[in-house]
Length: 110
Image 1 (cartoon, rainbow, N blue to C red):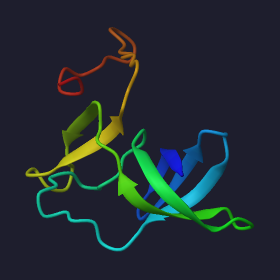
Image 2: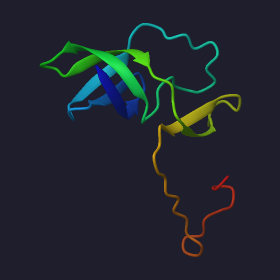
Image 3: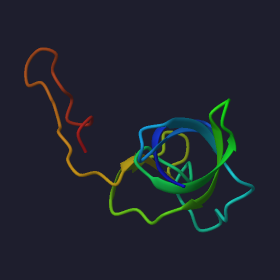
Image 4: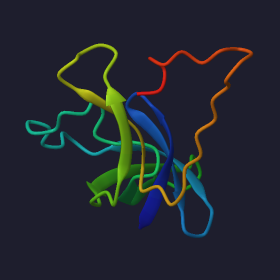
């Protein structure tokens, strides 16, 4: 079943299916992460294929991650050689910044 990641909390994710049902999901086994330079293999907005584990507990196992169309990333706060994907598969984004009160530092907007 295809779903989209709505929330990421460590190794657990909240995934929403096309019919609007939410599942607590985790990644099956170990995905090949040798060539991945991001801090987490999944980000909010990623499209995944998952199998329902327990309908009553609304849990599922993610067994495939579809390719991303696009993403927004920043340098990882813990490792300068990795990046942290904030969101993926975006259709629209809006940036808000204040000019005067409170003043937005130029380092905040890279």
